[in-house]
Length: 282
Image (cartoon, rainbow, N blue to C red; front, side, top):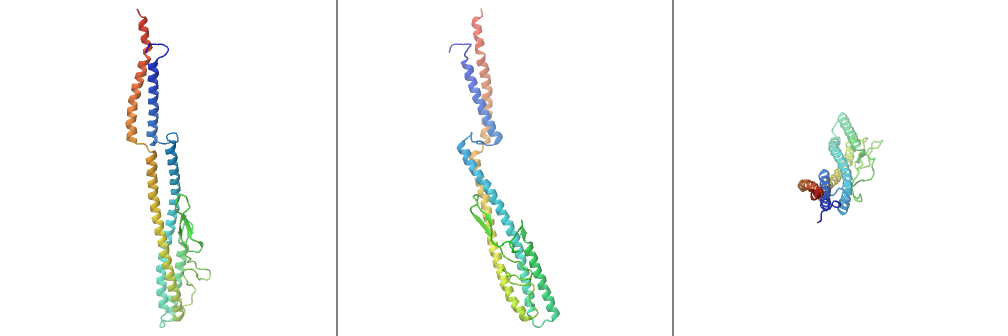
């Protein structure tokens, strides 16, 4: 190639190679700093689009987990209250059976009747306080099953049923507990009639708690599945866009060597025209 002071082809080639090395270094440094091989659509438009779609699903799953965690907490509070009420119902039965005894005196009957009333008050208090985040399945304020989102598209739901344990102002209950806090238990015959209502109430309550427990298990199981699905999607996104840090680190070191060599090569190429001067020296 003829020597020229106007066109230094060697320097141009060296500069092109050095610029290419610098661009590669910028790309590798961005991957190392972000931890991502595909951080923008410019890096890989197809992969970026897929990853963004999966990230949208992850956002939806976060909302699902929030909803199911709320459902789980409501169920836990309700189950704890229901189990306590069930225990109190068994105590009520003991009192009513005692009131069926014809031989007890009036003082004993009054004492048992007072215990009965106190237990009913406890049941009412527990049912009215079995609230989580403003939701109570027992106090009659909610009249339809409560739905909780079950998938990222919010087109599937899990439900918790409501179980009316609310006593009205007259002390009567027409829900699953068919009792009255003002029941007349003044005689063994009346106590025997009350026992029939009480036994039906115990059966209804235990059946309702069984149903609530099954729904709570379903929610817990689905929550566990959603957590695993979240992990799987996160791993899938990582497989698509995450940078191999060991590979990028090795590549960065190689590019740093190339950059140093390219700089030296450009420097040598730039000295080429100076050699022409030696042809004119005597």
